[in-house]
Image 1 (cartoon, rainbow, N blue to C red):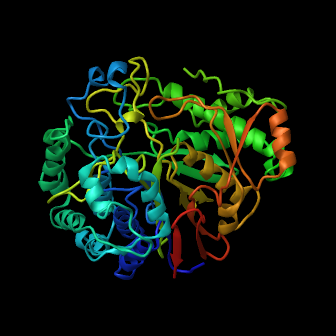
Image 2 (image 1 turned 120 degrees about the vertical axis):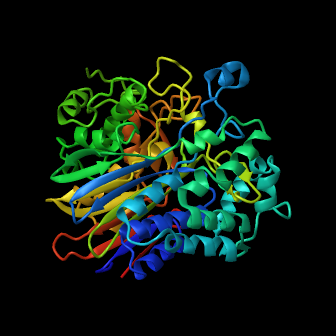
Length: 529
């Protein structure tokens, strides 16, 4: 808890990077950018300067919300002919899996337009972490152990992360001098260094020697998109997340559907509560699959976050029986991701989700000058069906689901919150918000509750398998599980320590004090002053 500012991120060193920038006179935008850059060093399984990201900003002076989408696009040489079924479809790993990385452009645009400090200040913490080293945590070591077999297929990845043929021990000092050099290039040259200079040139050369398709012009022509955020309300709170071309409608649409139910009367984690939340989530996921894609490529985009549409969808929910994968509406896996929330003394709020997509992205560690990082694997987020809204085409951004969220109450800032986790992101975030609003929990209580997620929809990664499970925390009581099974849900249990890897900063409306928290399932860390 704090009075002036607070930050919650995926790693203690990332939170400390935000603190350093705030103490130097930066605002929430500067701090969140610095923290996100630090995660690209200390969380290579989740984030990379070769990845993508979404920045949501609330400025107290203007009372406006701004959205900067750093989702990268495909190269001009990308065609579905290269990815047909005979050739194995859309690749998860390797040189054909990446799109142009968009994270750095989004972060730099955010800091240049809405921050106070210059690039060198924001990059200094991450440069120090990469050059001087950071301590390997159990979370990182476990991740490397799990991924060693796949990562070791690529010589550069093995050299950096398994120099003795095995993962580092917990407590090892991890240094990345090549990444430190690339971060220095960005500190000096900005987006030009990354998209037109030595970093882009190194990425293209590295991929070409392995058969990749990206060209230097694909980088030089790219820019992050700035546009209005999706907006809806829930029980008097105003909620904002990403733009319509993402699938960030899922949390908002689900809350709209649930708004007419008395969830508190149902009882937290009762069979009625879990059933209705799950059925509403299924309906929102079905709408994603039918409707959402890059808006520069024509496709009808329903008013998925309208109250009227929610009323139509709500009518499909049966209180006594689970539906399968939900029917699509008619209106005219998990990913590896990180999240940072910051609220400063002026009550600016920033919410950033960033990702390399799958664990360690495409698993190829770009080495040499201009390298020092993994590339993303965003290509398998497309579809190969030419009639689909998310069809793979040249210079197209795949449908993504960042969902960093901001909330206002009575026109005043209330919360910045988010998580990583692919298709679990909107499910975790809306449950956290329900814990806050419907059940009156404090931020740490809201993050540590048992939670649940549905898999009864078409997955967002190729080959887009349709799931059926309702995955429950093992802390949810057995009689509840039995009743849900009776209603037709296919139950699976998991040991889940908190609500995904949620992090949040919340403002108390009465006192104006700040509360920051991180779920206990990873290295997440909250700080305040």
